[in-house]
Image (cartoon, rainbow, N blue to C red; front, side, top):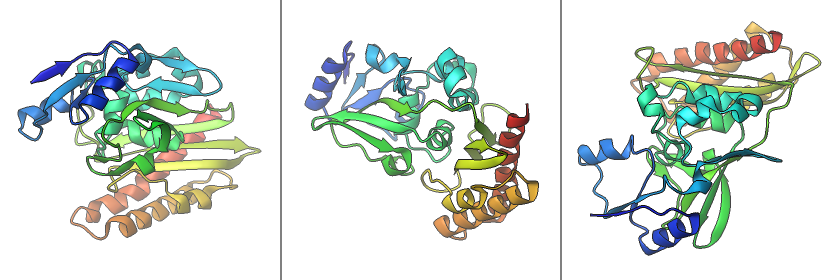
Length: 282
């Protein structure tokens, strides 16, 4: 099996164009597991960990985070701590310290797991994924790029370069949370993120995403509309949770897991919103 390790972006794109069926390798935390389980039999690997452009975090008019940036680097980034702490908070919950030292942002996106911890944070932050391939560069929102479990709408020869997002304003309030079968090293049974802005005591520009609840990341527009322009209120937050629960039911239909997942979604969403509102009071 061939193992290619480019050291520049143009070299990586050229090799990928020559070998579009090769598996992209960065952290390898999911690729290695699938290979051992026999669920992945690649023709070859293209290791992008030495491509400098994919390892960068920079703050200009927008924030760019490279696809090969690890979860630990996200967690410890002073740039993200200042301008997008939500993403750093989500990264801090991924796996163990060892996994966070290997797992990458691009891998979290490309694996398209409904339970991926970075996906709700990126969706709530309104991030755009930057993709480059034979036809040039394009951008895609997470709900458009991720089509379902394990299905990411990348064309052969396309490479995720990173994500672009806007810095949070001073009025921004945010929260990230997850539920697992244990406190650490657990795949999320439900996770979620919310970003809103507080103006004159009212909530504006609400962006809410609950993960591990549907087959792909979605913004819960009905709940967002219910919150828009309103004062923070526990009863209102519970009604927003009920709207999320109903939207999940409409998206997935009644399933065996719905008996516990739908009531949990109500309380989980309310907690997300309460934590975001409380952050504004600190």
